[in-house]
Image 1: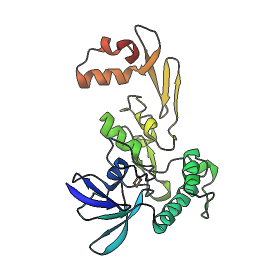
Image 2: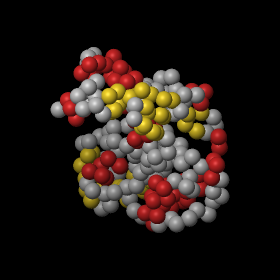
Image 3: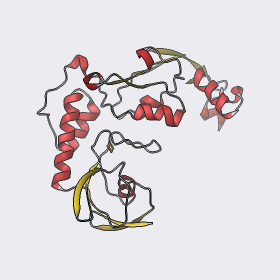
Image 4: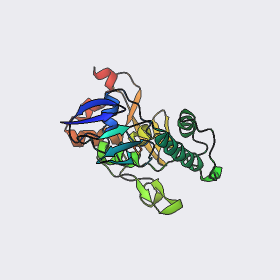
Length: 239
Ligand code: FES
């Protein structure tokens, strides 16, 4: 265990935990966009910046990746922290000016507009390049159906060769975790369309509702050994 201070409160925490995790445990809110429970943190959006003091030095760190230490003094809402978060928000707003999620977070942090040049609408896909979708696919689902492509201003998340991804099972985990909701995902009766690929949906053998892509159920069956006919019943009817 280590002992640290967060916003003046003394806290005991397990070694290896991050400042963000420990702060949330004691009810201190820190804004995040690229963090999600159960997915490895990456420190991409920089919204979770906090000020730390150790060994007489003060500096800004991303709380989602910075591990707690004995004697660490953390301040989560100093003027410097808020200024940096607002600056980050202006950058995100310039990148995704039409994203409702980004605009909402900006308003919450007191940013109404960006002073930076906004991306033209045709280039604004709403993606902040946080990579949460890529990590979720790899770590939660166990696949690598999508990844980062290109560099610099052309950097984007896409399936290999920007073609409908052959590895994808249509589970939609990437879309569920996306903090800006920018991964198009459509369920239409017996079809689901995601990443420009169409998936056949399974009809529940009891209630008849379409509930999951067949490819996802086959994948789960292969991974877990559960019989496919058990998986062809929707979670509600399995209870
Ligand atoms: S939540 Fe920490 S950098 Fe995005």
